Amino acid sequence: MTISAPVTVNDRVYPVTKVPAIAICLDGCEPAYLDAAIADGLMPTLKRIRETGTDRLAHSVIPSFTNPNNLSIATGRPPSVHGICGNYLIDPDTGEEVMMNDVKFLRAPTVFGQVFEAGARVAIVTAKDKLRALLGAGLRFDEDRAKCFSAERSDTTTQAEHGQENASQWLGMAKPDVYSAELSEFVFAAGVKLLAEWKPDLMYLTTTDYIQHKFAPEDAEAKAFYAMFDGYLRDLDAMGAAIVVTADHGMKPKHLADGSPAVVYVQDLMDNWLGKDKARVILPITDPYVVHHGALGSFATAYVPEGTDVAEIIAKLSATDGIIEVVDRAEAVRRYDLPADRIGDIVMISGENMTLGTSADRHDLAALKEPLRSHGGLTEQEVPFIVNRVMDLPGQPELRNFDALFYATTAASL
Image (cartoon, rainbow, N blue to C red):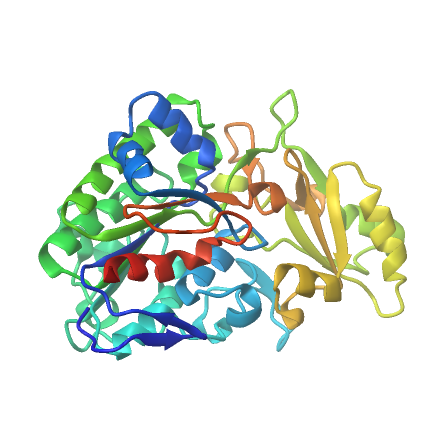
C-alpha cells in the first residue's frame, strides 16, 4: 500500500499492505449456491481456495438487506455506528419516507475514504448505482487515486465524478440491463481490468442479487452465474491479490405451494387493531428495483400512535403465523446494533419461508415472474467468508461479513 503506517477507522486498525487487498460482496449469496456449483465442478478456483485458504461462515447484520450490509462492510462496523439501517426509512428530520442512499445519512467514515486520505489507491465498482455515493463517501477524483462507479450507469461516468471516463467504453462492455446477470459480470470484469492496469491498493466489488432472487441454488441459471464468477476470481487470484469473498445476506424461498408469495400484511393487521393508518409500517427492503422482490422481505418496523399498548401489539404480532421475532425499539437496538432514531417503535422478523408486507393493495407483484425468493431476517444472516490465504479466523457468530476489509488488508500485509 502506498501508505507508511496503519490506518485507524472506526476504532479498528487496518495494516499497511504488501499486495492489493480485495473484498468481494456477492449479493444474496446463500452459501448453498457455492456448494451446488462446486459440487457440479463449475467453480474450480473457489474450490481450490476453500481447500488451500480459509473457509468460514459469517453473520451479516440485521436487517439482512443490501444497504445496511454494504455500509457495514465499508465501515467495518454495524448500523448503530454508520447509521444505515435499511434501503428505505422515515427520515426523522422530515417525517417523509425516503431512500437511504444519500451520503447525509452516513454517520461514520468508510475504510475506503480513510485509506485514500492516507495515500492509498482505492477502487469501488458496484452493480447498482444506489450504493455508489455512499460507498464513495470521502473519495476525491481530482487525482488518479480513486475510482468509484456502477455498472448500472457505466456509460455516463466521468473522471470528475467517478474517477473513470465512460466506464463502459473503457471496459469494452455495453452498459448491462439492470435486471440481468451481466450487471454483476460487468463488476467482475472491471475489477480484473483495474487490478491488471491500474493496480489499486484496496478494491471493493459488490454485485446485484437479481439471479439469486429468481433462481434457487440447484437451478442451471444460478450455477451458470457462479461459474462465470469463478473465471474472474481465477484472474484476480492469479495476479497475487489478497481476496475475501463474502455476501451481504443470504436468500430463501418465500412462497406458497402454488408459487404465490408468502406474506403477512402487517399494515392491514395494524389497521384492524388500531384503526385505519394509525400505525405506520415501513419495509426497509424497499428500493426502485421491484422486479427483484416486490418490496417483500423478512424485516419490518412499525411506528404506532402515542399511548398505544406496545406490549399488547407485540404479543399479537408474536402470535401471528410466520412471524418469528417481535421486539420493541430498545431491544432491537440492543440485539441488532441499530440506530434508535431510524427505526420504529416495534421491529418484527418473519421466518425462513415468509415475508412481511404493508397492505395487500400496496404491493405491485405483477413483475414477479418466478416464485418469490427474498431476505431480510435471521434465516438469511448466514453468509460465506472465504479468504485466499491461510488465516486463523473465528466462525459465526463472532465472524461478521463486515470484517471483510480488515481481514483482506490483514491477509495482504502478511
